Image 1: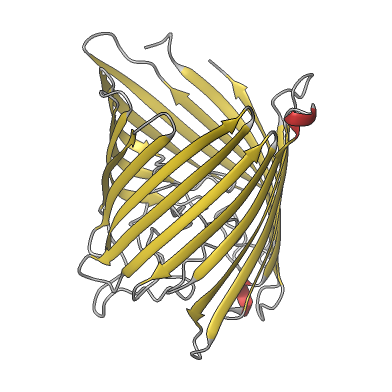
Image 2 (image 1 turned 180 degrees about the vertical axis):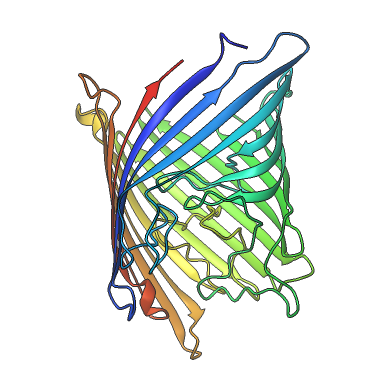
Amino acid sequence: FIEDTKAGLELRNFYFNRDYREDPGQSKQEEWGQGFLLRVESGYTEGTVGFGVDALALQGVKLYSSEETAGSGLMPSAYGNEAPDDWSSFGLTGKAKVSETVLKVGTLQFKNPAIGTSDSRLLPQTMQGAQIISKEIKGLTLDAGYANRINHRDSTNNQVMAVNTGGRRGIAADAGTTNESDDFRFLGGSYQVTKDLTATYYYSNLEDLYKQHTYNLVHVLPISEGQSLKTDLRYSRSKDDGSSNVDNKALGAMVTYSLSGHSFGLGYQKMSGDTGYAYLAGATDPYLVNYVQINDFANEDEKSWQARYDFNFASIGIPGLTFMTRYITGDNFERANGTEGKEWERDMDIGYTFQEGALKNLNVKWRNATARNNFNRATNVDENRLIVSYTIPLM
């Protein structure tokens, strides 16, 4: 229990600036914060059934915010309501292990095709619930979970959940009902069919609001030394669960050719059905190939394409330095006036992790994005994020 315990304190400094090009109200979001993320993962007690406990302590400190620039998602704030000087939360997770099966109950961060808690701001999003993962059979991972509350990345409160109704996706709760649920559950897993092919399936259900089947095939074709072709195919079928109008089919494909430090990717995503794609509200990560820095390109009937390029400078003798840029364009969805909606986004990431010296393992990342559309002036933005992080190992 003691010998296998791991603990680390991540120091995360985050500056966020979003310039609204046409919003008649708020002209920009600008906030700056310092985060402290303490993660403790114990080992297991001896015996057939091993027991352990994990802890997650989160502390945020405001370095800059104002009433006119608040609401970035970095901290508990909104336009007209400046963030507090500091905020914090604490969560415990009990766990038990039998052979290659682990059960966890308490504060959790999920990452699978059914649900992905976000970690793209100062502090991560967490959920309250339970999860069991089993790897008893070689190549097969089984995964089941349940949650009844969610703590968003800019909050300290555990709240009930809702389905995302934003954009032109056309999702709404039925008349006389509310867009709220305290019951989210999922069941699924992945199987490594061959060393190059992995198949995944998940079923998920946000009680009363939607149920969803998600399928995924990932194949990596090795061509030669330092050269490969990766194919990522995704399909989801979402339907209402009694109190909403959810009806969506989401098809996605991403093909990436890698050569030495270069990667070239092409993606396609298509929505069909009576609504857009359904997933949990509150900036939870959807499992879509064209979910990027600002947009998800998941409006009703929308079709979108992505072109992406990555370069790892380690291939030319500069380890730790990486670069990514991508362009996504979407159309074929309906604006409020009945005409065709269109949108596009361009992203760029540059990151560097120091490899030696006093700053070894310090990570610096700059994320830049530009997004434009013809259906909502308030979401035409230019955005910059600067993140500096360093993890201190404690155990």
